[in-house]
Length: 174
Image (cartoon, rainbow, N blue to C red; front, top):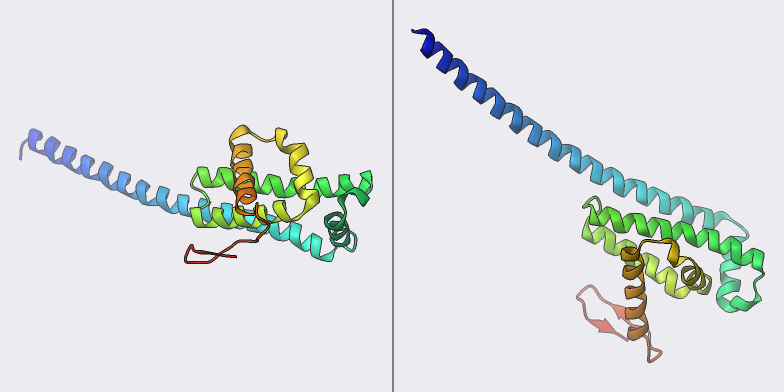
């Protein structure tokens, strides 16, 4: 076998090794992406669980939310501030889920759950509505437009005073 033949065989083996390495890297990048996505979702779920657990166990916050929902004008400026700090956590988590969905770290279904859950808080808690109105300018325009678009759709949906509940089939019932 000549030196040229050996060089050609070595080149073929080298090319095959490069292809095998690229294939291995592709598999590892996909695996790492899946782990990153999963981790991002768990971190967000863990964050909302921590906030909700604090709400469920705090003897002050739950009655304060109820008081604010009954008569927002009856709460003191200190109570408004306390609720504002609570709701800014929700807004920050919501914004994180929005951008994680845009970056494909949170799937569309997972993001829709965040959207629906946090929109429910925004439209049912008077203090949350007030906090969003006063703090939305701290958030980027794209996220702010997303939230305000959802709020507007909710207003249109409920303008006649009826509550609309969407079923799994997509049909609405009053």
